[in-house]
Image 1 (cartoon, rainbow, N blue to C red):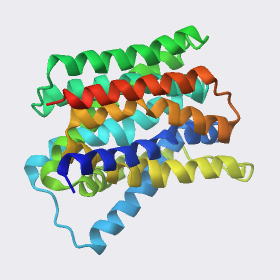
Image 2 (tube, one colour):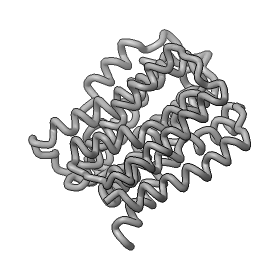
Image 3 (tube, rainbow, N blue to C red):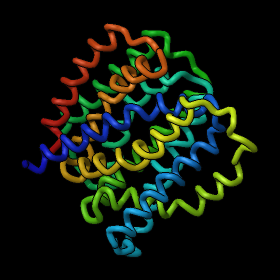
Length: 287
């Protein structure tokens, strides 16, 4: 299989998995404290990652990659999950999902700064056009009311873009699943302490939906999704494959409609078609 095509296929699978993250988080924070949720999901994923690393007898990463692993951990293990969990106390999952339209630009920018990628000018035009469509759609459909959730989501996008780009760069030499596994393991002392400090007195009243949300974000959002996503970024290019995130809001909205019962309009579906065009254009001019 062509290296670039393999990157896009892996990236697409990762993007679809990530599309369920915000609806699942929304279900979980309705009954779990957001800080406790952030710690617990990372602990569960970290212990699973550690088990896989031990089972496959992976060597510890060299010392020189530790700063990069710390950046990945701060960005996607702690930063994005915590900031989105806090944001979802103020906004709906449909509202928060539309901020994901800014993530490809953030990822491409950090790919430029951290990984030395140099997309052509036309790439930035397609990427900006896609982001503008998503943001414009949110404003035009009454999702533009500013709450505390909005700056929290913007901060989440920035740290996530950094974590994606750094992880994609590191995956070229360390391997995609190894990067996220070591980042999770590296975070375990902090996430275990965070989980212990915020543990509720009882979880007897927590419903099945919240437990399901916790299971999804722990297993799929924190671990399995990154196996595909980081491999995709490493094979297909951070800036190029990162544009697939333009589609994530619409997969996420579909899941929000199905799981949380939120409305998805025909306009959302029509805009998705336009976004596909922007992704295709960005891919063409990414290198």
